[in-house]
Amino acid sequence: MRNEATATVGVSVVVAVHNMREHIRRCIESVLTQSLRNIELILVDDVSTDGTADILREYALKDSRVSIVWQHRNGGAQLARNAGIEVSRGSYITTLDHDDFLSPDALQLALDTFNAQKGLQCVCFREVRLLPDGSLLEHREKNSFGTITGMEAYRRSIHWRGITGRMIVTRELQMRYPFDNCERVYGEDNTAQMQFLASPEVCSCEGIYYHRLLEASLSHRVSLNNIRGNMRFIGMRKQLHEEGFGEDVLRLHETAFWESIVEAYQYYWIHRQNLSQSDRHEALRLIRSMRWQADMPRVHTAVKYKPGMMHMPAWWLFRLQLELYMAVKRMIKGNL
Image (tube, rainbow, N blue to C red):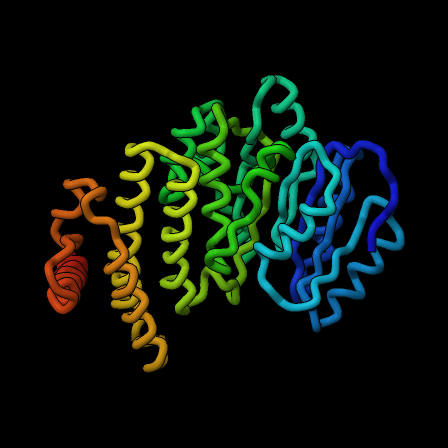
């Protein structure tokens, strides 16, 4: 379902939706009640089966700014977002998770930031987390960083310290870097990082993106997704090589990849009792595969020779190192 209006749209908001009947109304309302009126809302239904689709139809019928794209098979958020972006018309594009919502002035504040700084391609919202108990949490140091270079934004995004990935970008930048589906849950991180690297400067604004943390969230529950998600680094490496980025970026990336491999084993060590036997085997297979694919010559020396993070000549030695390291760490923590 598409509206046929051809007038210029200021901002396109794309929401990938799948079985979110409980929270989708607040998400939609937060867009339609924005102080900025020159917007379009593209809802991409990723084969919902819980009645969510009926809610989407309801809003499309009563507000001409709402369009629906119907996916024929459930392919995940990245593919759904790309489908919505393909039919969008906005000069600026942002995505909103189907359980999240915006402050009423978020889009206007972002647009004001673009207008105040000519040539800007990427603006980050403030991220405020809505916890399951209803309380709010904000890491202010990630939100109000002012203006930084795209390279600095990328550097901060490696472990998502000092910046968030809640952003709005120019149409040109979004079309240049569509959402990466190399990894279904965390591939979007690659997209944000490539967009940072391609931006001369990145700005923060005071518009708030409210990120709802759900107990059942794919990215927060104990599951293989938290290990498998690190495979995104392999897809990101391919993009960096294709774009011709220099050794400084490649070294940062490979160091982050190695750190993620070690952290994946630590995650496995902490949570393995909550995983099925088959999932434990798969977790070890994934970690071993990633370890084999790590480009160790590019990993910073201070990292790869750090206790608990050394590469080791054999898989069993790598595991033994991590098992001993984590056991000692738990023992020390227990004695404090």
